[in-house]
Length: 400
Image (cartoon, rainbow, N blue to C red; front, top):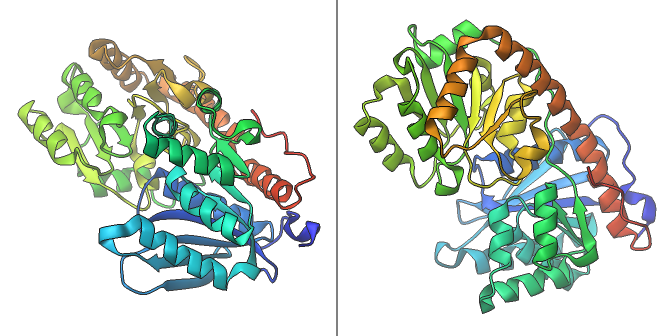
C-alpha cells in the first residue's frame, strides 16, 4: 500500500483514480441532522484534496443504491437493511460491500460510536484501519456503562479503532476517564464553512417563512430530544417580556415534538412559538434570525452553534461541554444556566432590544467561528488518515 496515496493536495473536485476513504454514517439515507451535515461537509472538503470519498448509509429500500461522484466529488452508497434486525443486517451488508470494493479505499471513518462498532469489525476482517469519531457526551457515557453489553462494545472499539476522535476538550478528558482509545485519541473539533452572501434578501426570506407581521426572531436548530433542553426554552419564553411581538422559531424534529407543541399551546404562546420540523438546508433560518439559542444539557461540539456563529448571530448557549470551547462569554456570545428562566429571558430580551449589542457580539461570533474552519479541519483529517495508513508515521498534532 503506497504511503503517498493519501497525501492531501488541494485541487478541483474530479473523480479520483486512486483509493481513498469510506465515511460510514449508518443512518437512514436522507436523514437530516447536525452529524449528517458535518459528515457531508467534511466529505466534500476531503474530496477537494484529491482523495476518493464514499459516504455509506442505510437504504430505505431493499436494494443497494449508488449515486456516483457529483456532490463535490463525493460518492454516496445506501445499503439495504432488514428493519427487524437493522444493526446486524447493516453489518452484513457493509461487510459484503467492503469486500467487493476493498481495493478502492484505505481507511474507514465512522461518524458515530455505533457506526464505529460496525466499521471496527469490518476493518479488522479486511485489515483496514478505522477512525471512529465520538460526536456527543451521551455516547461517551454509554460506552463507560459497566454493564456487560456496553463493556463488550468498549472492548471492540478499543481493539479495532486505530484512532478515536474527540470533538472537544471535555470529551477528550471523559474518554480518558472511561479508558476509551488509550494513547490513540485525537482531538479534532467540528468545522464550519464561512457564511457566504445571502442569495435572497432577508426581508423576503423572513416574509416567506413567517408572514408579514413577524417581529424579532429567536432561533433554535436541533433535535427535539430531552438532552437538548428545549423545555427550558419554553420556560424562558414564558418569562420573556413582550414575547407576543417576537417569534421563537424551533427548527428540528424528534421524539418530543408533539409533547413540546402541546406544552407551547397549553402555555398560550400562540403564533409566537413556531415548530417548523426538520429541513435539509437550515441556512435561511440563520438569515432571518436575530438571536440563536442552545439550551442543551450536554454538548460535544454543536454544529448548529458553529453555523449560527458563522452566520454572524449572537448566541446564548448552555454553559456546558464544547460550548465553552467555542463561545467567549460576553464577547462572541453568552453562556448561561437555563435553570433560571428569568435571567435567560432578560438576556435574550436585551439582545433583541439592543441592535448595537447584537451587531458587536454577532461580528465577534463570526470571527470566532473562523477558528473552526472546515478547510483546516479537513486538512487535519487528511493528515490523520495518512498516519493510520502509514503506521510508523506519528499522529498529527490535532489538539486545539
